[in-house]
Image (cartoon, rainbow, N blue to C red; front, side, top):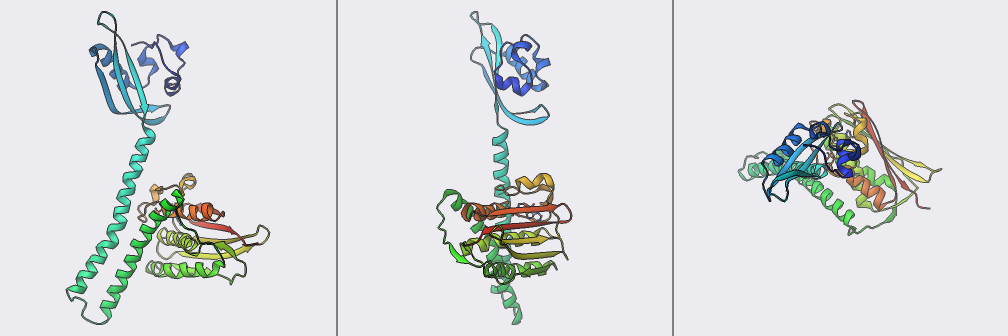
Length: 328
Ligand code: ADP
């Protein structure tokens, strides 16, 4: 159980230098008792061609938890006796994280799809069973079905749009336009949701003579995602403000969405635009897929050469904004 050889990755992982640590005991060099035990077992019980695979092994390395696939093999000498053991550690931490993200994504998407579908199903059943007898009720039911269908549509659009932008196949129709109309449209679409939570939704949208060159539908989607998030992550009776302005000096139009919601912890801010990323603490506030902001960033930055900015304070609220270059 003494060290004979180690490559530089192993040196870095366990924090020793092979030259200095030669012939030191594995126990002393490897801080992980289970791994030392595995090496010992391989050396003492191993036989010719014996190879042992440990699919998952979690190590605490330099204060960090990492997942490894460990392959241990016994080295057999000329007289068939075992002269040592070789351990190969394949770092699977990233793969495991990706697998976890994928399954979380599937479960979130399924949940997001299931909720509106169940309510559509229930209302359709009530309509066909004739449970909506007075005249006002069917209209109400149809409206709910329409809203829920929109939700489904939005979710699927988000997923499709991201993959289309990323693979470069999306058709972008850029035209000179003012942001006023498009922002107003998004505000009105989000208003019923805001009203359900008794949130005030104020929009300061001065008529804009300045124009940006943009794809109307994409910018609409980006603004709607920001306002929907503000609605989702703001507790009842809060306030949302949508604001449009122009910075002539920098030649940009600015759209801001500010809320008095739960906010985002500082350490999470660098990650919120990543695909599938969701702030753990906010999971209980609202369901989601972690795709909305990824799409906003793609639309504003990759497609329109603008910039998305965020300021947020936990427990106080968030201010998301994006800037688009003005048409010269
Ligand atoms: P989701 O579908 O989870 O809402 P997004 O990509 O739109 O995905 O947002 C990523 C994460 O950023 C969310 O899970 C949420 O925790 C956080 N977030 C986004 N907007 C806000 C906001 N206005 N207030 C607080 N947290 C927000």
